[in-house]
Amino acid sequence: MRDLAGALAQRRKQHLYRHRRTIDGPQGPHLQSNGQALLSFCSNDYLGLASHPRLIEAMQQGVSLYGVGSGASHLVCGHSKAHHDLEQALADFCGQPRALLFSNGYMANLGVITALADRHDGIFQDKLNHASLIDAAQLSGGTLRRFPHLNTDALKQQLDVSKYHDSIIATDGVFSMDGDIAPLPQLLQLANTSDSWLVIDEAHALGTLGIHGRGCREYFGLPDKIDRLITVGTLGKAFGTSGAFVAGSADLIETLIQLSRTYIYTTAPPPAIAHATLASLRLIENEDWRRIHLTNLIQYFRHQAQQASLPLMDSETAIQPLLLGSSECALNLSEQLIDKGFLVSAIRPPTVPQGQARLRITLSAAHQEEQIDQLIHAIVSSLNSSPLKRITT
Ligand SMILES: *Cc1c(COP(=O)(O)O)cnc(C)c1O
Image (cartoon, rainbow, N blue to C red; front, side, top):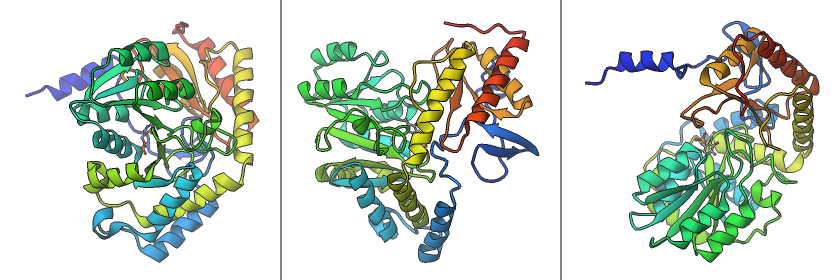
Protein backbone atom coordinates (compact mmCIF):
# COMPACT_ATOMS: atom_id res chain seq x y z
CA MET A 1 0.00 0.00 0.00
CA ARG A 2 1.28 3.48 -0.85
CA ASP A 3 2.55 5.67 1.98
CA LEU A 4 0.22 8.64 1.46
CA ALA A 5 1.37 10.60 4.51
CA GLY A 6 4.99 10.20 3.46
CA ALA A 7 4.27 11.34 -0.09
CA LEU A 8 2.35 14.36 1.22
CA ALA A 9 5.22 15.32 3.54
CA GLN A 10 7.65 15.03 0.66
CA ARG A 11 5.44 17.30 -1.45
CA ARG A 12 5.35 19.88 1.30
CA LYS A 13 9.13 19.81 1.58
CA GLN A 14 9.45 20.49 -2.15
CA HIS A 15 7.13 23.52 -1.86
CA LEU A 16 4.65 21.74 -4.12
CA TYR A 17 1.86 21.23 -1.60
CA ARG A 18 -1.46 22.65 -2.72
CA HIS A 19 -4.22 23.88 -0.50
CA ARG A 20 -7.55 25.58 -1.04
CA ARG A 21 -8.53 29.00 0.16
CA THR A 22 -12.12 29.62 1.14
CA ILE A 23 -13.73 32.70 -0.37
CA ASP A 24 -16.74 34.18 1.43
CA GLY A 25 -19.05 35.93 -0.99
CA PRO A 26 -19.14 36.73 -4.69
CA GLN A 27 -16.25 36.76 -7.20
CA GLY A 28 -14.72 40.11 -8.07
CA PRO A 29 -11.50 42.06 -7.56
CA HIS A 30 -12.44 42.52 -3.89
CA LEU A 31 -12.62 39.20 -2.08
CA GLN A 32 -13.18 38.28 1.54
CA SER A 33 -11.29 35.26 2.81
CA ASN A 34 -11.12 34.16 6.46
CA GLY A 35 -12.11 37.66 7.53
CA GLN A 36 -9.33 39.25 5.46
CA ALA A 37 -10.01 41.64 2.57
CA LEU A 38 -7.99 40.71 -0.51
CA LEU A 39 -7.54 42.38 -3.88
CA SER A 40 -7.62 39.52 -6.34
CA PHE A 41 -5.45 39.18 -9.45
CA CYS A 42 -5.95 35.49 -10.07
CA SER A 43 -9.44 34.73 -11.32
CA ASN A 44 -10.31 33.92 -14.93
CA ASP A 45 -13.37 36.14 -14.70
CA TYR A 46 -11.73 38.36 -17.33
CA LEU A 47 -14.72 40.60 -18.00
CA GLY A 48 -15.95 40.81 -14.43
CA LEU A 49 -19.24 39.11 -15.29
CA ALA A 50 -19.34 36.31 -12.68
CA SER A 51 -21.31 38.48 -10.24
CA HIS A 52 -22.92 40.87 -12.71
CA PRO A 53 -26.48 41.88 -11.67
CA ARG A 54 -27.85 40.97 -15.11
CA LEU A 55 -26.45 37.45 -14.81
CA ILE A 56 -27.70 37.03 -11.25
CA GLU A 57 -31.13 38.11 -12.37
CA ALA A 58 -31.05 35.76 -15.38
CA MET A 59 -29.94 32.85 -13.19
CA GLN A 60 -32.83 33.52 -10.80
CA GLN A 61 -35.24 33.78 -13.69
CA GLY A 62 -33.84 30.55 -15.11
CA VAL A 63 -34.46 28.76 -11.83
CA SER A 64 -38.06 30.05 -11.79
CA LEU A 65 -38.58 28.83 -15.34
CA TYR A 66 -36.77 25.48 -15.20
CA GLY A 67 -36.23 24.56 -11.55
CA VAL A 68 -32.79 23.63 -10.29
CA GLY A 69 -31.77 20.23 -11.64
CA SER A 70 -31.89 19.17 -15.28
CA GLY A 71 -33.11 15.71 -14.24
CA ALA A 72 -31.24 13.58 -16.79
CA SER A 73 -28.64 13.52 -19.52
CA HIS A 74 -29.23 15.49 -22.73
CA LEU A 75 -30.14 12.32 -24.62
CA VAL A 76 -32.75 11.19 -22.10
CA CYS A 77 -34.92 14.14 -21.01
CA GLY A 78 -32.44 16.70 -19.66
CA HIS A 79 -32.01 18.81 -22.81
CA SER A 80 -34.01 21.99 -22.10
CA LYS A 81 -35.01 24.87 -24.34
CA ALA A 82 -32.48 27.00 -22.44
CA HIS A 83 -29.67 24.63 -23.49
CA HIS A 84 -30.95 24.54 -27.04
CA ASP A 85 -31.25 28.32 -27.42
CA LEU A 86 -27.78 28.81 -25.95
CA GLU A 87 -26.26 26.31 -28.36
CA GLN A 88 -27.64 28.18 -31.34
CA ALA A 89 -26.54 31.56 -29.95
CA LEU A 90 -23.00 30.26 -29.31
CA ALA A 91 -22.82 28.77 -32.80
CA ASP A 92 -23.83 32.15 -34.26
CA PHE A 93 -21.29 33.94 -32.06
CA CYS A 94 -18.52 31.65 -33.37
CA GLY A 95 -19.74 31.84 -36.96
CA GLN A 96 -20.33 28.08 -37.02
CA PRO A 97 -23.37 26.09 -38.12
CA ARG A 98 -23.77 24.23 -34.82
CA ALA A 99 -22.57 24.05 -31.23
CA LEU A 100 -22.91 21.46 -28.49
CA LEU A 101 -22.91 22.20 -24.77
CA PHE A 102 -20.79 20.19 -22.33
CA SER A 103 -20.73 20.34 -18.53
CA ASN A 104 -17.24 21.88 -18.52
CA GLY A 105 -14.16 22.41 -20.64
CA TYR A 106 -12.38 19.37 -19.32
CA MET A 107 -15.20 17.15 -20.51
CA ALA A 108 -15.57 19.00 -23.83
CA ASN A 109 -11.91 18.33 -24.66
CA LEU A 110 -12.18 14.68 -23.65
CA GLY A 111 -15.41 14.39 -25.62
CA VAL A 112 -14.19 15.85 -28.88
CA ILE A 113 -10.79 14.11 -29.04
CA THR A 114 -12.08 10.68 -28.00
CA ALA A 115 -14.93 10.91 -30.51
CA LEU A 116 -12.54 11.67 -33.38
CA ALA A 117 -9.46 9.58 -32.57
CA ASP A 118 -8.79 5.95 -31.80
CA ARG A 119 -5.67 3.77 -31.54
CA HIS A 120 -4.88 4.14 -35.24
CA ASP A 121 -4.66 7.92 -35.04
CA GLY A 122 -2.10 10.53 -34.07
CA ILE A 123 -2.82 13.54 -31.86
CA PHE A 124 -0.28 16.36 -32.19
CA GLN A 125 -0.20 18.79 -29.32
CA ASP A 126 1.73 21.85 -28.22
CA LYS A 127 3.85 20.92 -25.18
CA LEU A 128 2.11 23.56 -23.06
CA ASN A 129 -1.46 22.54 -23.86
CA HIS A 130 -3.97 22.37 -21.03
CA ALA A 131 -4.02 19.11 -19.05
CA SER A 132 -7.48 18.25 -20.37
CA LEU A 133 -6.23 18.09 -23.97
CA ILE A 134 -3.29 15.90 -22.97
CA ASP A 135 -5.58 13.60 -20.96
CA ALA A 136 -8.03 13.49 -23.86
CA ALA A 137 -5.34 12.17 -26.21
CA GLN A 138 -4.34 9.51 -23.69
CA LEU A 139 -7.92 8.44 -23.14
CA SER A 140 -8.55 8.18 -26.88
CA GLY A 141 -5.98 5.41 -27.25
CA GLY A 142 -4.32 7.29 -30.12
CA THR A 143 -0.64 8.23 -30.15
CA LEU A 144 0.12 11.51 -28.40
CA ARG A 145 2.91 13.47 -30.08
CA ARG A 146 3.93 16.73 -28.43
CA PHE A 147 5.78 19.50 -30.24
CA PRO A 148 7.84 22.30 -28.63
CA HIS A 149 5.78 25.33 -27.62
CA LEU A 150 4.54 27.33 -30.67
CA ASN A 151 7.06 25.52 -32.89
CA THR A 152 5.26 24.90 -36.16
CA ASP A 153 8.49 23.79 -37.91
CA ALA A 154 8.82 20.93 -35.44
CA LEU A 155 5.16 20.10 -35.90
CA LYS A 156 5.61 20.03 -39.66
CA GLN A 157 8.48 17.55 -39.31
CA GLN A 158 6.33 15.32 -37.12
CA LEU A 159 3.44 15.49 -39.58
CA ASP A 160 5.69 14.83 -42.59
CA VAL A 161 6.74 11.43 -41.29
CA SER A 162 3.40 10.61 -39.69
CA LYS A 163 1.95 7.20 -40.58
CA TYR A 164 -1.27 7.48 -38.68
CA HIS A 165 -4.65 6.83 -40.14
CA ASP A 166 -6.15 10.16 -39.06
CA SER A 167 -4.44 13.11 -37.42
CA ILE A 168 -5.63 15.77 -35.03
CA ILE A 169 -3.64 18.89 -34.19
CA ALA A 170 -4.75 20.38 -30.88
CA THR A 171 -3.71 23.65 -29.29
CA ASP A 172 -4.71 26.11 -26.63
CA GLY A 173 -5.66 29.43 -28.31
CA VAL A 174 -4.26 31.52 -25.46
CA PHE A 175 -1.95 29.45 -23.25
CA SER A 176 -3.29 29.38 -19.73
CA MET A 177 -0.03 29.73 -17.79
CA ASP A 178 1.92 31.85 -20.31
CA GLY A 179 -0.69 34.09 -21.88
CA ASP A 180 0.80 33.84 -25.36
CA ILE A 181 -1.22 33.07 -28.48
CA ALA A 182 -1.06 30.01 -30.75
CA PRO A 183 0.04 30.69 -34.37
CA LEU A 184 -3.37 29.79 -35.73
CA PRO A 185 -2.81 30.67 -39.42
CA GLN A 186 0.32 28.46 -39.63
CA LEU A 187 -1.36 25.65 -37.71
CA LEU A 188 -4.31 25.83 -40.05
CA GLN A 189 -2.04 25.61 -43.05
CA LEU A 190 -0.35 22.53 -41.62
CA ALA A 191 -3.77 21.02 -40.88
CA ASN A 192 -4.69 21.62 -44.52
CA THR A 193 -1.56 20.13 -46.03
CA SER A 194 -1.66 17.10 -43.71
CA ASP A 195 -5.44 16.70 -43.97
CA SER A 196 -5.82 16.89 -40.17
CA TRP A 197 -8.42 18.27 -37.84
CA LEU A 198 -7.37 21.36 -35.92
CA VAL A 199 -8.88 21.65 -32.44
CA ILE A 200 -8.45 25.05 -30.84
CA ASP A 201 -9.25 25.45 -27.16
CA GLU A 202 -10.45 29.04 -26.78
CA ALA A 203 -10.88 28.91 -22.97
CA HIS A 204 -8.87 32.10 -22.36
CA ALA A 205 -9.63 33.84 -25.64
CA LEU A 206 -13.40 33.82 -25.95
CA GLY A 207 -14.88 37.08 -24.77
CA THR A 208 -11.50 38.80 -24.54
CA LEU A 209 -9.65 38.40 -27.86
CA GLY A 210 -10.74 39.85 -31.20
CA ILE A 211 -12.74 43.02 -31.73
CA HIS A 212 -15.99 41.30 -30.85
CA GLY A 213 -14.48 38.88 -28.36
CA ARG A 214 -14.83 35.92 -30.67
CA GLY A 215 -11.39 34.59 -29.86
CA CYS A 216 -8.26 33.67 -31.79
CA ARG A 217 -10.00 33.11 -35.10
CA GLU A 218 -11.21 36.71 -35.05
CA TYR A 219 -7.87 37.96 -33.69
CA PHE A 220 -6.13 36.51 -36.77
CA GLY A 221 -8.90 37.58 -39.14
CA LEU A 222 -9.56 34.03 -40.31
CA PRO A 223 -12.80 33.31 -42.17
CA ASP A 224 -15.73 31.65 -40.40
CA LYS A 225 -16.19 28.71 -42.64
CA ILE A 226 -13.28 26.33 -42.11
CA ASP A 227 -14.55 22.78 -41.87
CA ARG A 228 -11.46 21.22 -40.36
CA LEU A 229 -11.29 23.79 -37.56
CA ILE A 230 -13.04 22.76 -34.34
CA THR A 231 -13.56 25.36 -31.63
CA VAL A 232 -13.80 24.45 -27.96
CA GLY A 233 -15.03 27.30 -25.76
CA THR A 234 -15.46 27.41 -22.00
CA LEU A 235 -18.07 29.39 -20.12
CA GLY A 236 -16.53 29.54 -16.65
CA LYS A 237 -13.95 32.17 -17.58
CA ALA A 238 -14.83 35.39 -19.45
CA PHE A 239 -18.48 34.31 -19.67
CA GLY A 240 -18.62 34.26 -15.88
CA THR A 241 -20.88 31.20 -15.60
CA SER A 242 -20.04 27.52 -16.02
CA GLY A 243 -19.88 24.90 -18.75
CA ALA A 244 -18.32 24.62 -22.20
CA PHE A 245 -19.16 23.98 -25.81
CA VAL A 246 -17.79 22.64 -29.06
CA ALA A 247 -18.61 24.57 -32.26
CA GLY A 248 -18.24 23.28 -35.79
CA SER A 249 -20.04 21.70 -38.71
CA ALA A 250 -23.42 19.99 -38.39
CA ASP A 251 -21.80 16.63 -39.11
CA LEU A 252 -19.23 17.17 -36.40
CA ILE A 253 -21.89 18.03 -33.81
CA GLU A 254 -24.07 15.08 -34.77
CA THR A 255 -21.02 12.82 -34.49
CA LEU A 256 -20.31 14.13 -30.99
CA ILE A 257 -23.93 13.52 -29.96
CA GLN A 258 -23.57 9.90 -31.11
CA LEU A 259 -20.07 9.17 -29.79
CA SER A 260 -18.86 11.57 -27.06
CA ARG A 261 -18.97 9.64 -23.84
CA THR A 262 -18.46 12.76 -21.72
CA TYR A 263 -21.58 14.16 -23.41
CA ILE A 264 -23.72 11.05 -23.32
CA TYR A 265 -23.03 9.60 -19.88
CA THR A 266 -23.55 12.61 -17.67
CA THR A 267 -26.44 14.68 -16.36
CA ALA A 268 -27.10 17.85 -18.33
CA PRO A 269 -26.02 21.02 -16.48
CA PRO A 270 -28.79 23.01 -14.75
CA PRO A 271 -30.83 24.82 -17.43
CA ALA A 272 -30.68 28.02 -15.35
CA ILE A 273 -26.94 28.17 -16.01
CA ALA A 274 -27.62 28.06 -19.76
CA HIS A 275 -30.24 30.79 -19.29
CA ALA A 276 -27.71 32.96 -17.39
CA THR A 277 -25.01 32.24 -19.98
CA LEU A 278 -27.28 33.54 -22.72
CA ALA A 279 -27.53 36.82 -20.78
CA SER A 280 -23.74 36.83 -20.49
CA LEU A 281 -23.35 36.31 -24.23
CA ARG A 282 -25.59 39.31 -24.88
CA LEU A 283 -23.40 41.49 -22.63
CA ILE A 284 -20.28 40.26 -24.41
CA GLU A 285 -21.83 41.03 -27.81
CA ASN A 286 -23.34 44.40 -26.92
CA GLU A 287 -20.95 46.00 -24.45
CA ASP A 288 -17.51 46.37 -26.02
CA TRP A 289 -16.29 48.71 -23.32
CA ARG A 290 -15.24 45.83 -21.05
CA ARG A 291 -12.90 44.43 -23.68
CA ILE A 292 -11.52 47.88 -24.48
CA HIS A 293 -10.93 48.66 -20.80
CA LEU A 294 -9.23 45.26 -20.32
CA THR A 295 -6.94 45.90 -23.31
CA ASN A 296 -5.97 49.26 -21.84
CA LEU A 297 -5.30 47.69 -18.43
CA ILE A 298 -3.03 45.05 -20.01
CA GLN A 299 -0.96 47.76 -21.71
CA TYR A 300 -0.87 49.78 -18.51
CA PHE A 301 0.23 46.79 -16.45
CA ARG A 302 3.02 45.89 -18.87
CA HIS A 303 4.29 49.44 -18.99
CA GLN A 304 4.36 49.81 -15.23
CA ALA A 305 5.90 46.36 -14.71
CA GLN A 306 8.60 47.15 -17.25
CA GLN A 307 9.41 50.39 -15.46
CA ALA A 308 9.78 48.36 -12.25
CA SER A 309 12.01 45.76 -14.04
CA LEU A 310 9.69 42.88 -13.20
CA PRO A 311 10.27 39.60 -15.10
CA LEU A 312 7.40 39.93 -17.56
CA MET A 313 6.67 37.19 -20.06
CA ASP A 314 5.82 37.65 -23.71
CA SER A 315 2.05 38.04 -23.41
CA GLU A 316 -0.44 40.53 -24.78
CA THR A 317 -3.44 38.92 -23.09
CA ALA A 318 -5.09 39.19 -19.68
CA ILE A 319 -2.71 36.49 -18.39
CA GLN A 320 0.47 38.31 -17.31
CA PRO A 321 2.79 35.90 -15.50
CA LEU A 322 5.97 36.96 -13.73
CA LEU A 323 8.64 34.31 -14.13
CA LEU A 324 10.36 33.59 -10.80
CA GLY A 325 12.09 30.24 -11.34
CA SER A 326 11.99 28.23 -8.16
CA SER A 327 8.80 27.03 -6.53
CA GLU A 328 10.06 28.32 -3.20
CA CYS A 329 10.52 31.82 -4.59
CA ALA A 330 7.08 31.87 -6.25
CA LEU A 331 5.40 30.59 -3.11
CA ASN A 332 7.28 33.01 -0.89
CA LEU A 333 6.27 35.99 -3.03
CA SER A 334 2.66 34.88 -3.18
CA GLU A 335 2.59 34.54 0.62
CA GLN A 336 4.12 37.96 1.13
CA LEU A 337 1.49 39.42 -1.18
CA ILE A 338 -1.28 37.80 0.86
CA ASP A 339 0.08 39.54 3.95
CA LYS A 340 -0.16 42.82 2.05
CA GLY A 341 -3.73 42.06 0.97
CA PHE A 342 -3.21 40.80 -2.62
CA LEU A 343 -4.27 37.43 -3.91
CA VAL A 344 -2.08 36.16 -6.77
CA SER A 345 -1.40 32.49 -7.27
CA ALA A 346 2.00 30.86 -7.42
CA ILE A 347 2.05 28.35 -10.26
CA ARG A 348 4.47 25.50 -9.76
CA PRO A 349 5.43 22.23 -11.46
CA PRO A 350 3.89 20.06 -12.75
CA THR A 351 1.49 22.74 -13.98
CA VAL A 352 4.52 24.49 -15.49
CA PRO A 353 7.95 22.99 -16.36
CA GLN A 354 10.62 22.54 -13.69
CA GLY A 355 12.46 25.77 -12.90
CA GLN A 356 9.70 27.92 -14.38
CA ALA A 357 7.55 28.57 -11.34
CA ARG A 358 5.77 31.88 -11.65
CA LEU A 359 3.28 34.29 -10.26
CA ARG A 360 0.24 34.13 -12.50
CA ILE A 361 -1.31 37.58 -12.57
CA THR A 362 -4.62 37.89 -14.36
CA LEU A 363 -6.32 41.15 -15.19
CA SER A 364 -10.04 41.77 -15.46
CA ALA A 365 -12.24 44.49 -16.87
CA ALA A 366 -13.39 44.97 -13.26
CA HIS A 367 -9.92 46.22 -12.26
CA GLN A 368 -8.82 49.87 -12.19
CA GLU A 369 -5.39 51.34 -12.95
CA GLU A 370 -4.85 52.36 -9.30
CA GLN A 371 -5.22 48.74 -8.28
CA ILE A 372 -2.50 47.76 -10.72
CA ASP A 373 -0.25 50.45 -9.23
CA GLN A 374 -0.92 49.03 -5.77
CA LEU A 375 -0.10 45.50 -6.91
CA ILE A 376 3.16 46.45 -8.58
CA HIS A 377 4.22 48.45 -5.58
CA ALA A 378 3.52 45.47 -3.32
CA ILE A 379 5.46 43.10 -5.58
CA VAL A 380 8.48 45.40 -5.75
CA SER A 381 8.60 45.89 -2.01
CA SER A 382 8.19 42.13 -1.40
CA LEU A 383 11.01 41.29 -3.81
CA ASN A 384 13.28 43.88 -2.23
CA SER A 385 12.66 42.63 1.28
CA SER A 386 12.82 38.97 0.27
CA PRO A 387 15.78 36.92 1.50
CA LEU A 388 15.30 34.83 -1.64
CA LYS A 389 16.96 36.25 -4.69
CA ARG A 390 14.74 35.77 -7.65
CA ILE A 391 16.03 33.68 -10.50
CA THR A 392 15.73 35.48 -13.78
CA THR A 393 16.03 33.37 -16.88
C1 LIG B 1 -9.94 26.12 -17.83
C2 LIG B 1 -9.53 25.41 -19.04
C3 LIG B 1 -10.18 24.24 -19.44
C4 LIG B 1 -11.19 23.55 -18.57
O1 LIG B 1 -12.40 24.22 -18.58
P1 LIG B 1 -13.40 24.00 -17.37
O2 LIG B 1 -14.70 24.46 -17.87
O3 LIG B 1 -12.87 24.80 -16.24
O4 LIG B 1 -13.38 22.51 -17.07
C5 LIG B 1 -9.84 23.68 -20.65
N1 LIG B 1 -8.88 24.24 -21.42
C6 LIG B 1 -8.21 25.33 -21.05
C7 LIG B 1 -7.15 25.89 -21.95
C8 LIG B 1 -8.50 25.94 -19.84
O5 LIG B 1 -7.83 27.02 -19.46
